[in-house]
Length: 372
Ligand SMILES: *Cc1c(COP(=O)(O)O)cnc(C)c1O
Image (cartoon, protein in one colour):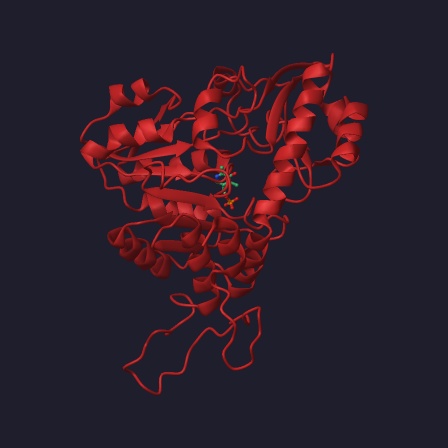
């Protein structure tokens, strides 16, 4: 079965009693146990049929045996980090998502150190690898500068040492990038973004191939209770059905807006992996089937004024939904990052980020042109 068919079909078996072509939503928190020999479903914090249907579909999208859904991308991340032991080092991309920084900042008291490294350069990883490294956390493309790391090259360095490579695949989505096929061990998603696609669910997922991880993650999730509810799982599964269509349209519109930005006298550098002069364009072209719908650029006017002038682009954080959004990282998503760190990462006060939705491309182009 091809990817687009899986989106619509996997985990969507017709109900045998009624023939519903959309499976019912299972909201029960507990399940009858007349026969104690069949405890397939026991209690909703552990097992839930609606959640499992979503997980079955998410796993199939990466040809993986396992996926687990969580109450947020952060919850998925915290669960993945539970693989680490005191004394270990975590090597991470240097410009990870802001929430990921917050999550990592909690690790010190467990005796785990985090080493931020420019993972667009595999040699930088090779230079710091050691037996005390417990995990490599790769975000690609990154936020907001759309830096791209070569997953295959990083995984080739980690594999001989048995170090798991986790790829935060939120920005690309499984529609554009398949981390496990490229050699990674765990794909992490904030399903809040492209998988929900409608800015109305917070969720997360881990997709992987290891029976050992599955036991560990499931036990962690059941113990800590960071599970998503059935209604959210239903919405996420519904969102998946249109993901390819949305992503395709979003990418096409993003490319049109990038071309317009390049022509504008009010715009400096434009960051988009689809541009031939993007530093990792060749890697992106090799490992992604499209360049995505997040674009950032230097605005030569006043960012606050630009944010006041857009009408169709909502001024809001997040990405991957049907709604087009604009934000200024220094004022919004990256405000908690110290100004010196932002400067070192190349996130200037004039950097703007677009997350392109599915509105008419001409309308969006006109809105952006007016605002600029
Ligand atoms: C949003 C996001 C997260 C966190 O996900 P939540 O669903 O908000 O908890 C993690 N990584 C990336 C790249 C994100 O964009």
